[in-house]
Length: 238
Image 1 (cartoon, rainbow, N blue to C red):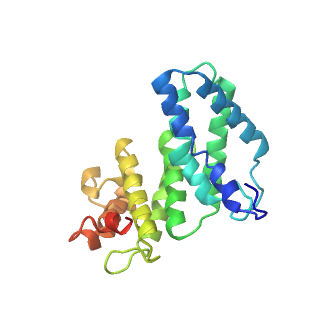
Image 2: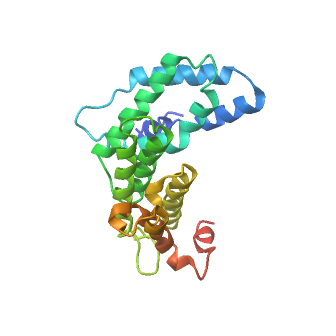
Image 3: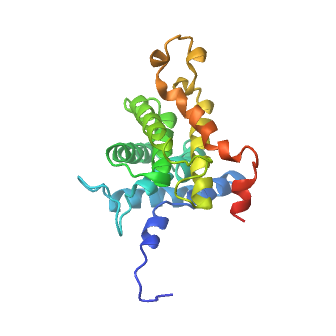
């Protein structure tokens, strides 16, 4: 319905492609190849229509390049479709290269422009997901390291003494906690040594192992305020 009002969320939400995981799941369940062709058609169209803005963060009205949007595309909405369709003939080599190019330039965009607060956790989770999913890229390791360093330095100051998010919203509190644990979980699934402890690395010098293992410590610190009442963040959202 046309209300005569301009709503930026139409542009922002639609360009996350939140239906891609559903299309992937539907294909896996039904074998209906129309889901593949629809995904390919939309990916090609988006690549042609949505060029990366030069020297601009994209964090504004009518933009499809907001940091939060790039992060969500990289870790939540695009990967399930890529994994489901990668071996199917409709998803051609040219399409695979297009996909890889799009995730690469999004990762570079996230390294160049950062936000703060809960949005930063989505941006860095997306950047890390890129580096974990495409380790063959020359920039993959640097992307993972940058994401871990940035998340750790920022997340330490996001929580109050009682363990609750300083944005004082139960929804964002739950979101940030989930992003940190999702971040560490992805690293664990990939066997990423950047999250290990100094002892696990076999090094006596924490700096030699690097400080990236500290994200695990942060994940524990985040829920300090929830230890006595582990259902607190869940109930607050009801």
